[in-house]
Image 1 (cartoon, one colour):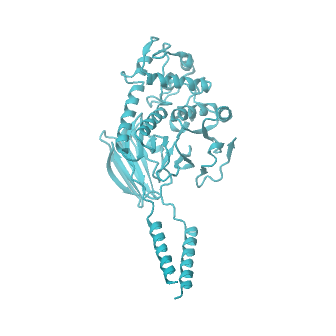
Image 2 (image 1 turned 90 degrees about the horizontal axis):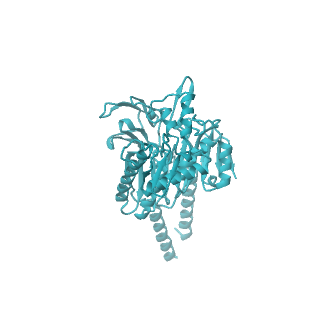
Image 3 (image 1 turned 45 degrees about the horizontal axis):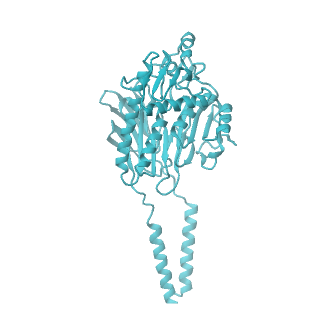
Length: 340
Length: 121
C-alpha cells in the first residue's frame, strides 16, 4: 500500500514538472528592411537562420535592382527604352516575363504586365495623382496588351511606347525566390512579410499553422483570420493606393481594357496558393474581374483559394479555406458565402 | 491518512484545475509595448498602457506625430507626401506594423498573446 502510494506521488510530481515546463519555442532569427517600396520583415527558425536571412535580404535587393523600371542598369529599363529594338535578357528576367505573359493569357488580360503607361498617367508611380483625360487614355490604350511583348529564349522586344512593369508580381516573385533559397539553406520554418505579401515555409516550430490576419478594407481592424502553412497569401485592394478628386475616388488597380480604375463591386481580394507570384498576379486579376468572373476562374482552375470582400461588406471564400477561416470579433454579422 | 483519502484529494484537485482551465481561459492580451525604429535603428520603446503623444523628426527633416491611447498606437499626423502611415490607423497587435517609408519610420507593437503572425493588406 505504502509503496504504491509512493509510486503515485512520484508519478504526480513527474507529471506536474512536465506540464510546468511550458512552451519554450526556439528563438527566431529576424531581419527588417525596406525594398521594393515596401517594409519587409522576415522571420526564420533553425540553425544558420540568421545568415540565411541576411542572404535573403541581399537577394531581394538584387531582384529589385534587376526589375526596376527607373534604374538605367536594369534589363526592364533597357527594354522599355529600346524603342522597338530587341534587348538581351538573363534567364531570370525572361522567366518572369514568361510568367507574366502566361498570367495575362490565363486571366483574359485582367492582369496585364504592360499597364505601366496607364498607371503612370494617373500619377500612381510618382504619387502625384491626377485624372487623365479620355483623349490621353485613348492614346495610351493601344500600347497595352500582351501582344506588345515578344520574348525569345534570351531577347525581349517591346513595341515602341509599350512598357513592362513587374510591380504587380515582383513581391510575390521575390517571395518564391526567397522561399526556394531558404529551403535550400535548410530552413523548414519561416514567415516572410514582404509588405502585405506573406510567404510561409512549413509550419511554426511547434507544428501549428501560421495565423494570418486579413485587414478590413474599410478600417484598420482585422476582418478575418486564416490558418495557413507552406503557402503564400497576397491581398489586392483599391484602398491600398487611391486618391479622391471632386468627390470621386480613384485607385491604382486599373482595368487594362479601359484604363480606368476597376470598379466591379469588390474592395479587396486575398489569394492563397503555394506560389507567391501566382497569388500576386491573381489577386490583381480577380479584383479586376469582379466576383462572378472570379468565381468562374476559381472553378475552372482550382489551383488557388481566395477571400473576396464586396463593397457591401459581405465576404466570399473558396471551399479550401473554410476549415482555417474565422471572422474576427465585431464582424460576426457579415454574410459569408462559400464557393464550392 | 488512508491511501484512498490521498487519492480522493488528488482527484479533487485535478478536477478543480480542469474546471478552472475551462471556465477561466487566459485573456487574450494585446501588445503591451511598441518598438519604434528610425532607418532600421531602434530609437524608442513605448509602453501601450498609458496615453502618450510625441513627435519624431527624421534625419531628412520629416515629422510624424505618434499617439498612444487605449492600448493602441498610430501616426496621427505626418509631413510625408502620401500620408499612408496616417491612413493605416491604429495598431494594437504584433504583426501589424505602422510604416512611414519616406521618413524611415517603423512602429512595431510587441508583447502579449499575439493573435497574428502576419497581416496581409
